[in-house]
Length: 391
Image 1 (spheres, rainbow, N blue to C red):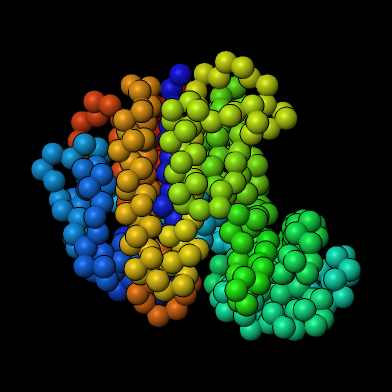
Image 2: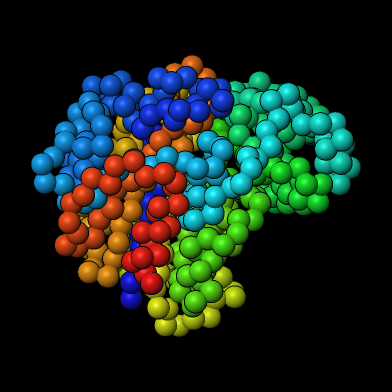
């Protein structure tokens, strides 16, 4: 059975795209380059072997004369710098027009409808904000009023934060589902509703990553849909299930950390995942012709990029690198591995938002001939590689 393993290192961009200023970014942004410089180099021998250091000059990631994979740079076609836009294009669906953003908060009409249909009686914030900062700022008022904290960012997101020791997690998920329906019915063109649960830990409001959920718009005609429709498996690890609103997915498991996502990816490659426990009810194929294992590793973005933590970002990349060798070790001649990113989030420039950047792409299979792929226009080259391999 042919398999494609796609690993997205969330936000590991490699340099500003020409239109970066249109997205509020500076031409100097380069997530991986700056993380390498901040940490005086990174210890990533496996990414190095695949050819990451051959793409451009990253401090501590040496170029190699005999890389084990194909390597290159991808330029996004869609007008965006967010998770959904990037992942959809990776899977073969390029947005024709950008998602709506709300730099001054959500319109009162939308807020009023949300309050009415959820019965939450009011909201707090309604402005762009850092998620960690806004829950610290408004936690006391949240507890006093019982109102959810509703905020956005530079991305097209409607985020709802609550202390789940105060308002149940099930209520948060219900409110997010209602918000998603309101946004769909009203044609607001908002990419994602995000449930942002937190708890008070050691006296500080702390987000609970494993309980986060994303409620996305539906993509159309991705490589995931094509494989599923033909009876194949699509195993989603991390927030992939949410990014694609379950479309084209046959099996899914959420994760609470990069380490958990990497462990599950390795298990999937070794055929050790309990697929019967994580399969969708509508999936019935007992003899799939092919499989996609699709993993998102979000810590680089969520825990480190958005928090301007270049040291943590570097350690996260080094942790990812330690899993590449065992993943490759258990790959068969029927397996293709693609490692890439979905946008940037440079922790070393002003601001805490995503950055409009090129991304790296590394392609490996047993016996592959090394090749410099150069600059590829369109993240959808990943879908093309997968399609050529599987079909």
